[in-house]
Image 1 (cartoon, rainbow, N blue to C red):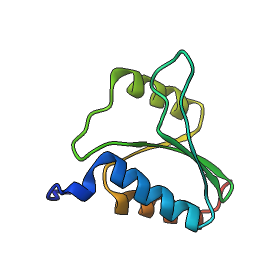
Image 2 (cartoon, rainbow, N blue to C red):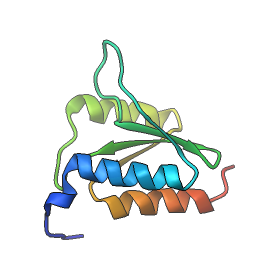
Image 3 (cartoon, rainbow, N blue to C red):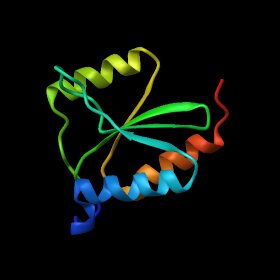
Length: 103
């Protein structure tokens, strides 16, 4: 989807907006980082029977090689990892996860 970039789309602004929405809607949100390793997703979200990892990027931002490898490892382990560039997309992902039964 083509969108015009605005200051509100800075990575930190998008992250703050999605995390505030998540916390106000029943998710536990934790900032994560690894000790001695790179590529950890920015936030882990816990709720609705799920653990979801989100990497926030500015629009058209690129994942590092370490991030790509780590996301691949997590997905291979059956975990949900998402890359979010726009707050409304992150909120939509969480809304959808709240509605879908976890099997």
